[in-house]
Amino acid sequence: MNHKDEKITQPEQEPFQVDEFRPEDAEGLVCLFRDVYGEGYPIRLFYDPEAIIAANRDGNYISIVARTASGKVIGATHLFRSAPFKFLYEWGAGLILKQYRNLGGNNQLADFLHNKFIPGEPSIEEIQGEPVCNHTHLQKSVMAFQYVETALEVALMPAEAYTREKSATGRVATMLTFRCCKPKPHRIFLPPVYDTVLRQIYGRLDDTRDIALADSRFPADKATCAESSIFDAAQVVRIAVHEAGNDFADRISHLENQALARNIVVFQVWLNLTEPWVGDAVDILRDRGYFFGGALPRWFDGDGLLMQKLLCPPDFDNIVLCSEEAKQLLKFIQTDWKES
Picture (cartoon, rainbow, N blue to C red):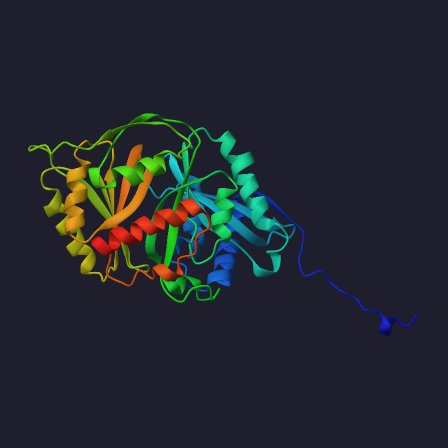
């Protein structure tokens, strides 16, 4: 046999396994994010190996990784705390190297997370998914694990986060979806202006609520308890209103002005639906240009309501949605935005 004529081929991919995070995976996670997103991913923690290790140790992030026998991290998915209630985790920051994307890696990561890891973690009471809306791949992934669409964040992510993927030309919307792990029935109050749409959302939820109309006024002696988180790279501010009081308008103005000074263009306010005067807060926000976002189950332990305001184009035409329920929600949000 003429060995010069032999065609020797090498496999492009190594076999891999999915497992929980180990500290030695941290450098590989940084390389993975750089390979997929360049330097544009807005969560800067993923460019710092020591920060990744610390976040996993403290429980603020839970990394699930796909690694080869040689230790190379070729994919990952995460749970992380992004809501005021610490036992509500967000499922996100999932990615896989391009050459491994047709080998079922994403499915294996998701299956390990939901069917092996989460059932053994009693402290995880609710999971949130936040799939992007410039394509439907991630939306289909969360739907496969019985998440329920409850809210839509318009123009949340900057296009720069998708430069390497070339999958977006403008800011990208995200869908908020929730899955209950530990039921907690409780009473919520719906603002009259959004009563119908919220009842439609809650009708599909996988947990029960005692629903009443928010028809009370702000207590005269109650102060607002709220704080903001500013994400400069994404130009987003998120204002968590744990308690709304008689000074609500002034408190929102103060936090908005802080964000404006840092060139923020996307404003989000999270209101507490367990307060019977939440309708007053909604009316004030609507007068300031905010519009409907949707329901946030277990956000404060009790449920929350997302309101949002944009100082940038919303680009509704490029929001790509998977389900009819999501499309109806977008239609309502777009109408409410026009009225804001």
